[in-house]
Length: 82
Image (cartoon, rainbow, N blue to C red; front, side):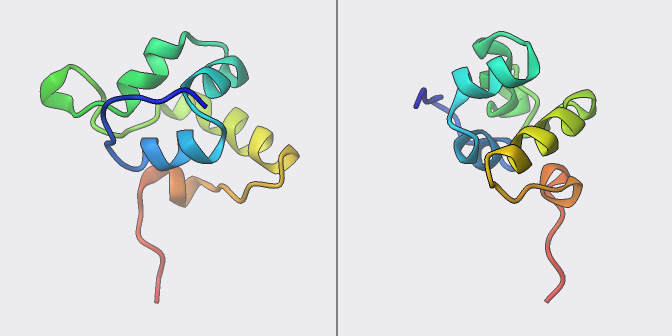
């Protein structure tokens, strides 16, 4: 599992659940460095944990194929109601 040196959320938890930067990059058709930027804080040139919405559908579909529970609420980093 490829790692990134940053851990901005929710991107980092989604990436790790789906097998790491390289695996997620293959799933959505981007470079591993692009996925790594999702996990990088915004002040350091990343997205601050935000995964571009254009990839959400692919990530949800690929997660379902792998038996991983993933939804838009998780991708958006919204808290679960108690």
